[in-house]
Length: 328
Image (cartoon, rainbow, N blue to C red; front, top):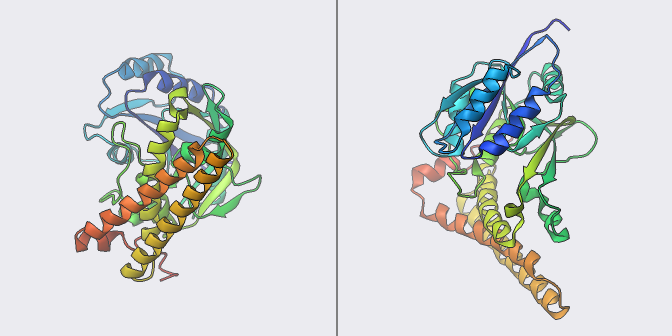
């Protein structure tokens, strides 16, 4: 194949040097054909640990092509990602989290898919979870909380993608105007919310199809502290909020109908969780699973209140912004 494809791997990091080291080590193991022009950039989002030392280590080893680092002083994953886009020029952009370990053929398989699907908005692959310690069985029911992604063994179009390992068509991203203005909150420091992942995927999907290819594989490392019940409750609260705003972005009906249907969802969801909690109590079983679900619904409900209190102009920007022109 003589076609040259350019792809930039953007790694945003905040005080996570030890895992960043492992992420870069996995990248050094990539086996990439010569027709692929690939580069790696680290976005240092105000790190106070030894992130710069990790970068210098791999720069000296010279095993990662065109490795560079840029500091983004505005705290948060979204401004860090925007910084990464602004400091790269490849036709394709890959958001690689600083706790994701790529399979040796990740870059090659991603490039192959990009060449055969040049008009897609973005694509992603299989994201498996790599646990620091084996989790309690009930935690596996909340694998979505850790960005697990598995749509089966066949390549197929999908409605949304997780942010970890998302590969984006730069030309399509430009059409979304996301770089000019992001609409939803994302992780800021240790704040657990994933609205940015949802927003990027949905705004891209309004312009071009999203795809999943199981051959593009990575492992998402989950440290033990993230498997506590407290953490699961916090992250599901944020996921609930992100879910409501994601639904708002693809909503094509009236604002009032959105609010009423969302409130009904919260009521039925909370009732179902309360019933599950009661059953668990009667049977002498742990009540943590329904409690985590309640936190998701609480986050969903808090997002409804937030939208109701929004000024009209901001609300108008969000509502239906990810509806495809062909569907409107």
